[in-house]
Image 1 (cartoon, rainbow, N blue to C red):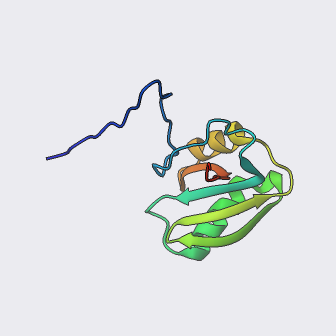
Image 2 (image 1 turned 180 degrees about the horizontal axis):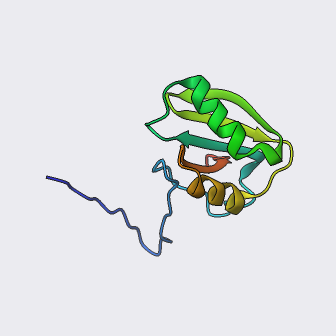
Image 3 (image 1 turned 180 degrees about the vertical axis):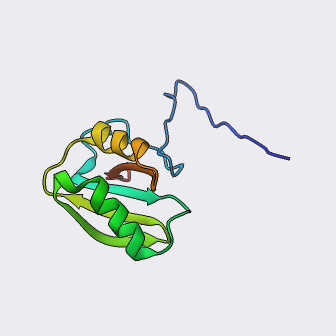
Length: 111
């Protein structure tokens, strides 16, 4: 059985989420680390070296640096020439070994 829950509030805006299920900030364009993205490789990628190679090949035109592996298959990647979220996502969608890519969002606690 699969259960789906929805949380709503009085006059609340709809909440969008990242592909990892984390709520996005309302102003996502200004609430991200410029040039940094979370890139998830496909489960068919054999190991960390193969994953890093797939990322570097897909995004070679943008000066790719793999900052670190966050979890198995998920990497924090920095570009010296940020192509923007739409281009990074388009390349991920067109690359068999990359499952998805999204901006490294900045989240703030509201007081």
